Image (cartoon, rainbow, N blue to C red; front, top):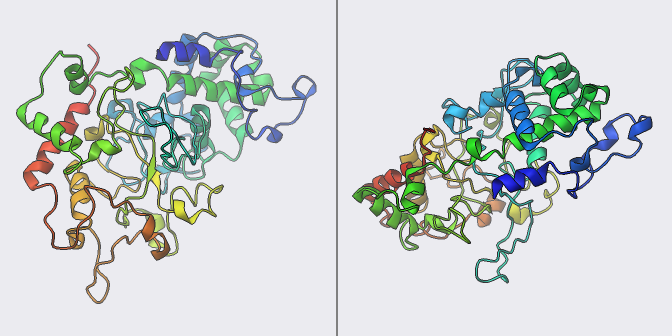
Length: 414
């Protein structure tokens, strides 16, 4: 199925929106009207496999960054499920390669079926009339509408690869060892047109990031369990039951765990939700008390800044390979998987263990959101309850859930 999608992706018959920011490019005789992105008139029509290998080469090319120190793989390491290879809350980038970002780097795996962002999403999962609210898009705030939009964003981000514009990227790329691979795949004159070369760059990165063998191998123990090839241990079985139980973990409400319409679960509903995660002082931007990351309504996303009901909402990530991470949530506030699970059951029942205290000793609940946004925070189970109430998961049950989550880690290819 995904292979067919890849083939369709590179077809010039695909219909797509016009190339974003086309006005940046100088109009030349043969580029008076930019073609739709997927109909970019490359001199040579590369196969899906050729684009995959070109994208793989570019993914590791540090020449794509202004500092010359940062490649896509620097923050999205294949040996760490295409996530960060360290325990930093945010990764370092910028013109000198030392500037901290503002959000934790996510894994790039299992994103092939991500729909474009929609404020009102309806899924044909039994009741098509249910509005599931803001859903889809790439990045923590869903602002990238396609995989190539997602691929190009870090190239121009001031605290990631920090290029001043697209031309700067192409100028550097044309002088890198990857230039020959670009010419071989897309034609010897691909760099004659900066727009053509840019589209080739982000298309190759997009196709590579949709390669099943790399980004959606479905090689975890849980996948083998779903195929009937293995059994879960008693602790894993208990953890799965708690994960699915709407009165206990209720994790599956957002991190879908069952086969759906014949597809193995991605462990995300692609939605955006406000969890009220505590502020992380390890993020340098948070030293400014006026800086608040409101996710869907800013500051990185600007088109929904006038929607206060969206403030504090962030994308629900896939839990596949979650046990390979060293920091959790959009701001890396939690350092262990146990802490991340514990947050859900202690946020409301034991807030003093989650949030800091003010000068008077009062708990500063939801300390990373302005008071006006507190009403946006989700209160469905396992959240809820009053301070002093018994959490819905005991320490032993949290351990079982974590044991189950470790079955979602992809095993090495044989």
